[in-house]
Length: 77
Image (cartoon, rainbow, N blue to C red):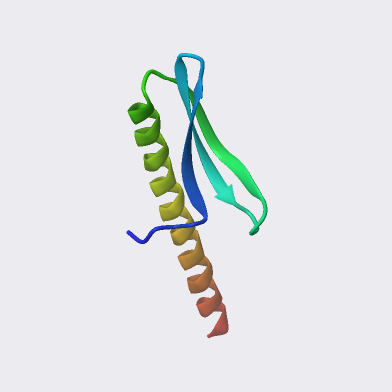
């Protein structure tokens, strides 16, 4: 799967637990947290969850784009 610069996983430690955040790049200067999950015991668990969510979001985004292209082609003729 190609790497996407639109979505990245960020892991943050909060006291004794870890938080995974999926960050979406809106513009070259602005990013927003798309999904977040708290309460992981280890950094590895948080990272695994975040990477899995990034894969799901990228796959869904690609599918939506494909559907839009196909719908546009159907309307042309």
